[in-house]
Length: 380
Ligand code: PPS
Image (cartoon, rainbow, N blue to C red; front, side, top):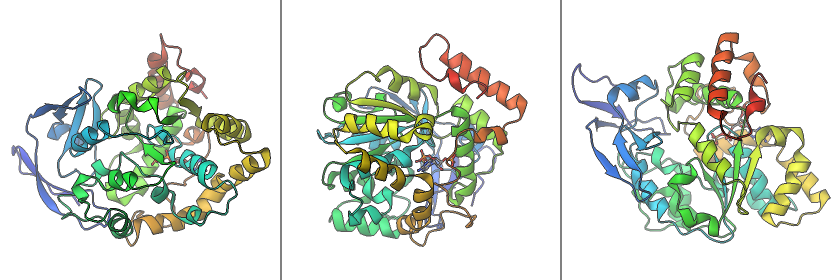
């Protein structure tokens, strides 16, 4: 649902990104406000034109750009970013950090299984991964105030049980995370520069990236399939927005480059989705060492099977229902949103030769002068 604002009006009626499909109207003010985050970043309200050009249902508080990089997030993000900057990470925390659609959910399940379910007999392993591994970048999507201080049901029940007296506006994910026993597996789409600098003195980070062309295809289909975004764009527009840094979560390159610079830190593991697909056992052995989980080959084999695409997809449909409850997460009910194809090279079925050339030039320009290892994605 989209409510148009009158011509020339500086404020606009909008809907909250409400997963129960019961949008609440509110007023977005596209005023030129700016403030500073604890991380030192500057926050600027994105203009109405920028928001409209994203072709998704607007957030109640509009969108903000976090400068200097220009990260584009929902208007609630600054409140949560300051809370996250003050967060105390624990020595047994493991964070799975990604630019969206690069293999987050897969890695969350791998890490959680290695830490909590190596014998595959932990009953909690049947819960949706999103309950077991909290996403610290989720709260900004909720526009909690506009939703009358309530979220949709399964997560609200979990929140009330785990955080009695907690306020939704203070961040449901953040508070559930605080109340979660370790070792915690934390999901995060924010880049390193927005997180506390001392985080790596205690927490470990597994950073996953992927061929940007496959990320783009995955991004597009997620938006198309996921009815809450009401995405009206076509594939080419989506790719251009991802390249130009004009859509939610962008820009892409600074996100990857910040992680690449930290890849030699003993608490950082930089992983490619393609390597996981090519030789999962090799990657699991490396993770075993990184996480200090000391699993034998047989257990690693079992983890590989348990977290394979077919296994996760089989359970995934139920997991989506468990997490999102009666909400209509997926308009096209024949397809699960998170477990689509799980392959490498799907972009070849989606890109025209012209678009491929454009994206390859974009990759080439952005890796030029760096030793970042993504040149293999050119023409691949
Ligand atoms: S999100 O929304 O950002 O958390 O999405 P994310 O999990 O990062 O990425 C979704 C893509 O990962 C694929 N996926 C997998 N691939 C291989 N094996 C397993 N087990 C697996 N689980 C999820 C998922 O299908 C999305 O990729 P596409 O290309 O769209 O299929």
